[in-house]
Image (cartoon, rainbow, N blue to C red; front, side, top):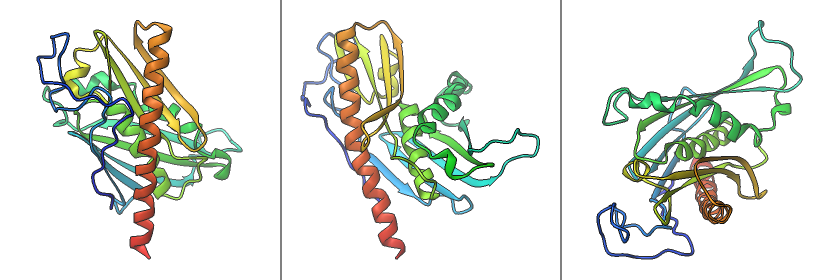
Length: 248
């Protein structure tokens, strides 16, 4: 079991707390603009699954279960490589407003895209691996939390991968770029950038951009995400090592 760990980026700055609308506002939880929330990761959260993981990033809480590889349904066409199915749901109590979780109906396809490039599909031909993610509490940066937790669950299930996939997002609010935004910050953002990244291979598996960005700001936000993903990747590896050592 991994203990909570925070990962601050190189340009961490402490500022006085101010209202969000102020040009000199400070984040409500006291973090610097380039500081991520504490992360808590644990594998083996669901015993009935082939592999599973639980993750907390601040108030964002996610659990992911992996089943398989198991034989693909007969109705499916023959394939020499395996199939990866991803499904993301939000608990009815995950958001303050009922029904708000329906705004994230595209998360399943985005999770699939983020993981597909990291999984060795040819290692389980004619079979299927199912990934089920459930957001227990939506506290902001939900998709990066789901992607990172799902990658950890796949590793726990023994699914062969090129590398773990860590994910992070940046919000643009006024003239500021903030890493790992909380829900209230996402509500005020002018744009967002989310990156899924394999730290050891230095490869991006997915990049999602919303809002209007200049080329320079995109580059700066991407570097912030890559730096955060590299640090998160180290925490994820530590979690897996601790799980192995505790089982022996």
